[in-house]
Every structure is written in C-alpha cells, then in structure tokens.
Amino acid sequence: MTTLHQDLANGRWYTFTLAEQMGNIGSEVHRLIMAKNGDQSRFDSALDRALELIDLTLADPRWKKGYKEIARVREVLCDICFGLNQYDTSLEALDNYFFQFGLLAR
Image (cartoon, rainbow, N blue to C red; front, side, top):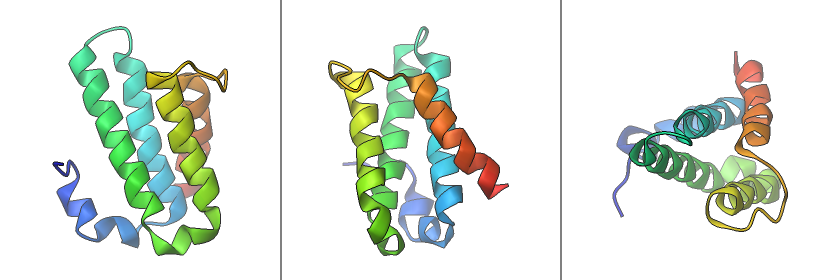
C-alpha cells in the first residue's frame, strides 16, 4: 500500500497533539464534503488521506486510552462512505466533530 503522507508517516505525525491530529483529519473530511457531489477522484483521494491519517492516529501510543473513540470515528466514516449508514449520520456531522479539534489546536 502506498503511503500518501510519507513525511507524517515517518514520525512527524507523532509530534502533533491529539487536537492537531484530529484537526488535520477534519480537513480531509471537509474535502470529502466539498467533493461529494462533484469529482469522484477528488472524493476518493480525500477519503484515502483521511483514513490514512486516522490509521496513523490509531498507531500513536500516546492515545491508547482514546483508541476506542478514534476507531469508532473510522468506523463511522467508512459506514457513511461504503456502508448502509447504520449510524444515521453524515459527513457534515463528522465535519462538525472534527472542527472542534481544529479550534482547540489553534
């Protein structure tokens, strides 16, 4: 599998706070929203990047206690994009969730 964020995967991601990590994931979720009714290629790329950042966050040993919440966010995102939306939520709701982290990081 190709790493999309090579610089981050090589260790820089682990220097970010949780708020910075989640805020960056939120940027990709926002890009998903912007592309969802347009270019499928842009949508797919943003989804790949968002999932990679979530996976990097899950691999960060500092957040072991919050692992379940981070994993659930990944599950919900995948359910919205690939599943039946069994959680009855939206990309916009996830965008709002992640936006709070972006605010905290700033």
